[in-house]
Length: 118
Image (spheres, helix red, strand yellow):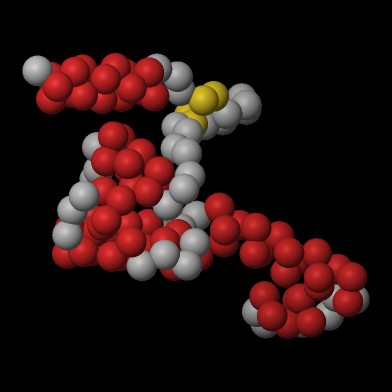
């Protein structure tokens, strides 16, 4: 009788093992810390810091935080070349993308830029 997950996987054929490994990699890729995501994108804290106009130590602190403003998270993701999409998941329903956050942030940035020009 199999004793652990590796025993179960090893009893499968090569094609089935490959499918299991691919799905495991997909699941791992779906959940990453900010630091892991930055490493996967082959970016340094210094590069992110330059994009965010903060010091490298600020990026280090940001990556360790468990509670971020959505605007801060969006800026970090954009500094890596990505886009942030906020999704809500409920049992027995498709995921819903929450709208309005990008529009509110764009308005805030526009207002801030206008104030800076005065």
